Image (cartoon, rainbow, N blue to C red):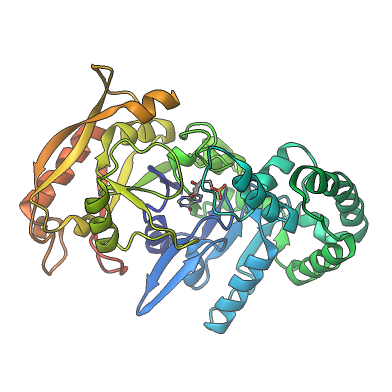
Length: 422
Ligand code: IMP
C-alpha cells in the first residue's frame, strides 16, 4: 500500500506524529518536497525530536528513509541531523537514501532569501532557509544537484557559471560583496564525500519497492495552502505541497498511489504573512497559542491561530484526493464554552462556500460560523473513541459530515500513545 500524508492547512498540522506512528507498518518513508523550512516534531518516549530534512520514519528500526528528488537539501543541516541521530545511537547506515536528483541549497540561496525579504514591500515571512531561491534556480536550469557534488568537474563548472552571474546581482542590486568560489567549492565537495554512500537513484529504488509490494509512506511537508499553485499565493512556499507533489518529487507514478490521508488541526494555525480568514482576535489568539504551544518548530516564530475553516478543508480534500483525515490537537480546545466552525464566507454581502483565490476577496471576506458546544476535557483514560467527551465527538462528527470524509485518527496529546484510531 502506498500512502501519501498531506497537510491540509498552512503546515504544522502534526504530520510528523502521524508519519511516525504509521511508519511502524511500512517499509519506506519518503520526503517529496520542501526542505529544512519544515519542522516535523516526533515525541518518542520522553524525547522530542524535530526533523527538518530527515523523514520522520527514521526513528523506526529497519525502515528505509528517502529524501526524494523534489526536496531541496541544505547539506549543512542534513549533516547536523545525521550527527544528532548518531549521537542518539540511532543507526541510519543503509537506511538513509538521498536522491541524486535533489537540488542543493547553497549559501547564496540563503542570503538571497533574506535580502529579498528585507527589500519586499509585501513580505512573505519566509523561513529564511533559501528555499525559494533554490527552487527558482532549479526551474531556471542553473541549480546544483546532489549528484553534482560527486563530480568535481561538473560542480566546478556549474558553480563558476552561477557565481559569475550571481555575484554581479548581489553587488549591483543588493550591495552585498558576493561569494568566494574556492570556499564554497571546497565545502560542497566535502559534503559530496560525506554523503556519497547515501546518494542514489531513489526513483529506481522506490519503483522497485513498489513492484515488490513493499509499503511506502510519502511524507508531505508544509500544507495545501502553502502549495505553490493552490496556496494563498504569493504567501506560499516554493514547492508542490499537495499530494500530486508526491509523484513529481519521487518519480513514483500516480497509478501507484493507493491512498491519501489528510492531516488537520482541530483549529487552524499559520506562520508568516498572508490572509487568514478565521484568525482569532489578538488576546484569544495568544491564549490558544500558549495552550497549544504554537511556536514554529523551525524558526520558533509564534503561530497565528484561528477557528477550524471547513471551506479550506473542503478544498484540500478535493485537491489532494483525501479519503481519510487525522484530526490533531483536539485537546487544545478543552475548556472552551463554545467552539466555531467556519462553513462559508461573506464578501460584500454575498455568501459563498468555495475557497476564493482573489487576494482582495481573501483579505476582505468575513467567515460564517456554525457554533458548537465546547467540552471541559476531551478524554480521560482509557483512550477509545467512545471515551471522548460527547461534545468532542459531536464536533468531530460535524467536521466529518461537512467534509464528507472519514476521520480515522484523533490526536489528544503529543505522545504516540495519545492517539485514537477509529
Ligand atoms: P519558505 O518556505 O521559507 O519560502 O516560506 C514561505 C512561507 O511558507 C512562509 O509563510 C513560511 O512561514 C511558510 N512555511 C514554510 N515551511 C513551513 C512549515 O513547515 N510550516 C509552516 N509554515 C511554513
